[in-house]
Amino acid sequence: MHNSEVSTALLKLAEQWRSTEVLLNGISSSLPFEDWLNAIASGQKTIELKAPAIAINPLQRLQDEGLVVTAFGGFDPVLCEATFPDGKALYFRASGESWELAIAFYSDDALDGTSECFTTSSEYGNKHFDAGYMPLEVVANLILASIALYQLSCGKGAIA
Image 1: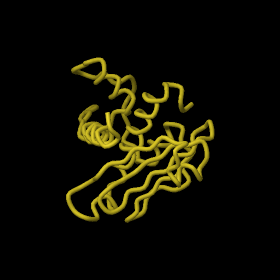
Image 2: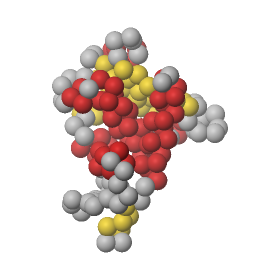
Image 3: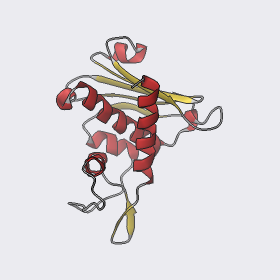
Image 4: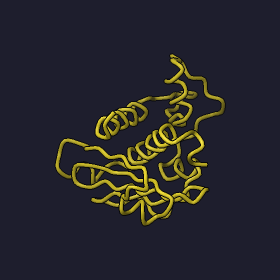
């Protein structure tokens, strides 16, 4: 599978997750990405929540996954810089008509997109600056979906 095909599949996965509505006592909420991905992978048609779902902001969702986020947000470009508990660096950038994400052992490698890192990218939106004004919920979805892809391609324990 080519990088562009993987990126397209990732974007579709993130959008599908974003469009999934979970109702708990009549209140709309989001389902944790890993629970949703496991349910889809196992072919489940219904998802039982283990605990009450609470609507949380996109930054909090990333922090709940163990990321130490040092930059998140902005407009053209939308950026996220973070580190994992094991010290790996994550860099996300959305600008113009596309987004890109890199995970590396060192922050400079993630920023430069060197061959020593995992990268994925895709086009976004229908207008020239759509990616640069991407909603932060979509940014968080793409980051979490990209982390899942990284873990699948590099082993489940790739980020701990």
